Structures are given as structure tokens and as C-alpha cells.
Length: 297
Image 1: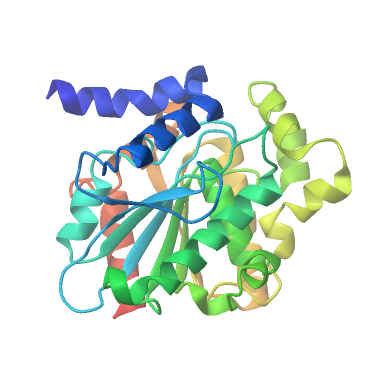
Image 2: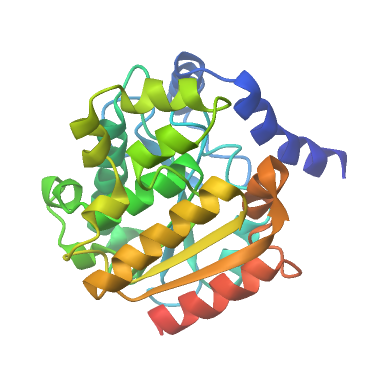
């Protein structure tokens, strides 16, 4: 129980100002040098030359199962695949027979948000190229992300430049699941998001209105997009407004989308949606399970 509590505590510590990119790189380099795998038995891989261009992969069951690919949050400047996945996701999704992967990506300020989005697309391309060896179906990939990761998965699912740069078609994933993101419309988020995150947004998106628009999934929602979206959010004013606006823009473009509001308020709810996803008693798990099952059947 103490170990589980510690795992749940780490994401909060990271959001409060924890591990920096240099430390993550050092840990990854040490692990690769020793040939170690993750404690949970995942296969550790590098999809690029930077130490943060790394991922962990868990095999699914049966012949060519679907793959759930997770992108962590952390304000674009923190977070790690090692501790931001949540305690339940791996066991839950592999228990359903799916393969599961969780990626790192380069972090602000050493990298730009544009480079982070490209890292997500490049990780997809890398995994698709290894699908035969890894044993999953490359035509049944579902992309999920939380917080800043929700923004990144929504961005690569709407702005096809990132997929194109990685040699991918718009249907390289079957669907995209953003979990309680904001900044889907960056200029609006920077105007309405309040002072708490103002510095984080400024560091990530800068002051150029054209760049802010270019990094806004809602403003890229005209076709082509990824084939389907499931947008989940909790009771946060900005997260709710941003999620609803993204859903509206996707629907207007003719992209299938579902949107669901889950219990939980403010920052506590924002953390809960990630921690609890995969817990069979959590309402969000039921919604995601049903949607993914329909999508990949």
C-alpha cells in the first residue's frame, strides 16, 4: 500500500516543481547503459537520439492486439513516462489484452512545443515500424494524453503536419483521447486561464499570436483529422470551455467526437482523472473502455 501511495504522489510532486529534463536524461542514460528494463517488466526503447525520446512498451495478449499509447502531462516542462501514467492504466489495458506504451518527449525550455508534438508523431511512426516484432496491430492504435499531453495528442490529431513529417497518414491512429486538457485554443487559454498558469503558458507558447494559433488544436480542426476523438474533462472552468470548443470544432468539420464530463473539481479533479483512469470503479474507465472497444473491434 505504501508503494502504491508513493506512485500516486509522484505526479503531484512533479507538478509542484520536481524532476528537470537534465535529471530525466541522466536517469534514462544510466538505465540504457545498464541494459535495464522498467520495474514493471516493460521493454524500454529509444525512438530518437535525445535521451528523452524514449518509451516503455508492454506486450498485449493474443495475435496483433490494439495498442494504447499514452502521453504524460506536466505543463510541457515536467513529467515522465515513469511516474505520470497513473497506477492503474498498464494493468488494466494489458488485462484487456491491449498492448500499452508510454512515451517521454523533450521538455520546455530545452525543446519547443512544436518539437514535443513532433516527438509524439515520431514515437507513433517508430512503434508502427516495429509492430511486427512487438506483436501489435499497427492499424489499431489509440492515442491518449493527460493535461499537457492531452494538448499534444489533440495537436497531432488535428494538425497533420506532424504526422506528415513522420511519414504518417491522418489515419495512423484510430482515435485520440485527450484527458482534461486545456490550451486547445492557446490564445483564449492565455487570456482566460488566470495567473496560476500564466508563466507556464508564456514559457510554452511565447508571445507571438501567430505561433499561439498554430499550436491550437481547435483552430486546426478542419479536415483532415485523426478518425475519431473522445474528449474527457472534469469540472474546471477553463478545461470545460476548451474541451467543449474543441468538440464543437471537430463536429463542424465532420470528425466523429464524443465528449463527457466526469466528477471532480479543480486541480484535484484534474489529477484524479489521470490517477483513476483504468480503475474499474472509475466512471471514466467505463467510458473509455466502451469507446475503445467499438473503435478497434
